[in-house]
Amino acid sequence: MRILIVLLSLLAAPVAVAAEHPVWADLAMLYGQSRDSKAVTKFVREHKLEEITKGPSGSLTPDDHAYSLLYRANRINTVVIKVTPPPNGYAQDNWCSYSETLPCKLVAGDGRPEVVEKLGQPTKPGGDRWCHDGVEVWVFFNDGETGINELYIWPVEKQP
Image (cartoon, rainbow, N blue to C red; front, side):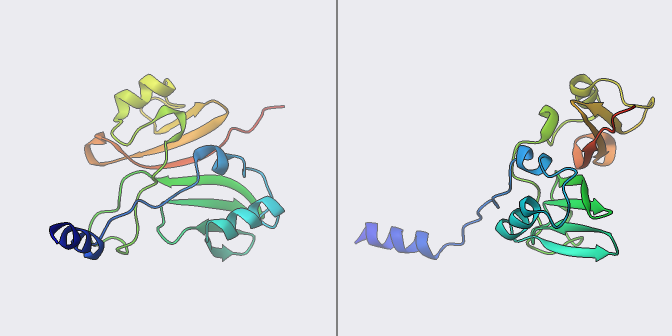
């Protein structure tokens, strides 16, 4: 009887389950693809992304706002990753941080010294942008630069 009571209490208890997000490689392979391509259309459908459009530019974002695909001139050009959950009162209850491994070996607790150690010096002294492994990474740090809040990542344009 005790086992039955324990099982019933476990079933009735709310369980927080981390959202399943696509891995970084699946997001990165969408760079440069048309918003209307088969690959992007399939990705949007599979991950139930919502679209906010402003002419030929816009974003594709899941309901939990953990990441976004930005497009300009109807081509995917930037991935935004929410690394830290939004502060209380600044978002919907279901908004969360990205649940997969971050690109460039970054982790949520990395401050500026750790990012410099992993990615090298920023593109400008004291800046918040780094070029690494074919992408440019714009790091938004938490207050006091004690961790990463958000990442904007786009491919580095090849110079002729």
